Length: 336
Image (cartoon, rainbow, N blue to C red; front, side):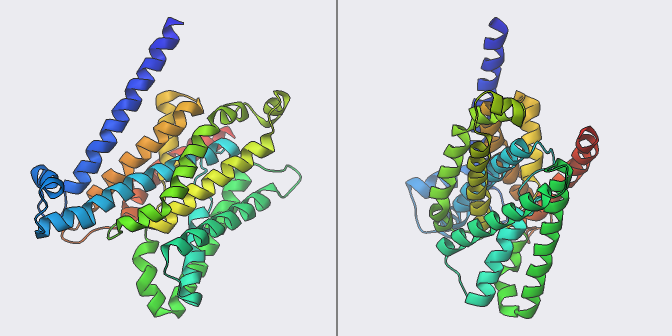
């Protein structure tokens, strides 16, 4: 009993530390960049706004960018943790399973064919693309006599990601105007995003965050295997559908805001499990905090590599996540 209390205390300390780190890195994201800004100027921009260039940059660019980075990073990480849980696949994530690419393709389709530019419409289009892609991947991964397996899911997801990426490139090649509008968005970026984009998506993000916390107990039961969970009286199909809805909400909103940012959904859940074990009551909140921290750090680093220009944050997360993906692929698939 005493050991359990000590373990829980450590987890709570880690959780509180994570919250403080997210706040700190949000501050760092506001301060550091090409335009010279200090912490005092940040405080003054809210208490004594004078309309100066620095204050405008802080409020119109840096603050929205930092908040969007934290929200998108947290959402992608939680979506990845849920995907890995319901599929029992260490490589599952919105990017690897093609959900990001599918949502992105449908948005490009809407921009190209229907000239849609409303962020609210983007949200529903991204949700629809994420849902369609998820259903196709699940169907393809279930084909064959051995049913649904992690390897087939991974292959089906990779195939769908490649297909949607090719279709997206083909459509953009035929429409130069659409290419100009969405090219930087397709690489995954939070630069230049306005706070209105986040506020428009916030109801869906909050619903996804709360939904992920509500099903943590069911996810713990499901992690013991479908047969065991069913034997304990759990409706496993309902739990998986609920998790899928949460994944679509989080991944679809993240893509609508920032474009398809990869690898956060793979890397962070493994780090969270390494810190708190297999209890989803801790994995989900830890994944959210760690995802926010990783994307904020990647975005800050993206500002300095080729200054005064910036590298899209999606490129930075790929550089960070690719070695980890290779490690997980080599370690995880050998155990399946």
